[in-house]
Image (cartoon, rainbow, N blue to C red; front, side, top):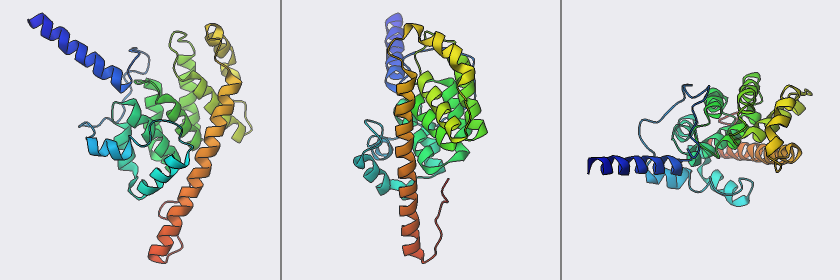
Length: 241
């Protein structure tokens, strides 16, 4: 009976990890990096309000934008940190995207470390979007570090294409070629991945960044207008990033 209970508990734990997005367990160079972690799990009310409406489907729809604008007044550093601190791809994905929308550069290091650790699947693409939206030297360095390691892990089909696309985006903004140093490793990495196309990844990523930036400025302008109407002062609560 004791052995059966141990096996049952182990199965429950593995299922819990799978649901959270830890579908590929790996112990890598960055596994011990410190990241912010919540002391308590997110409650159902919080998930229903800040996660469920945003994690599935395209973030470029009017439905997403309307839902976001309804909550924007309550979205701050603490709330987004709470999303990122939850061990679940859904909340981390939403948190990273919110950080990009709001220009929360204070969370850049945590997001960069989450990308390097890659504890859960699916969230990595949104980490890359957030880092590209910051476009700082340190954000760029996180992407370089990620690619230097994960392009060598040919059995890990993670977010290598998103990281390449993010570097391409930042490089284009700064008139730099940030991909050159990774191209040899990229070509080797995709040898057994015929459906991986860098051009398509870059095109799709750039489209998502354009949508993110357009909505960022629209939502910031909307918040500034509300603030002016409420206070009579011509100054936004949070400046544009």
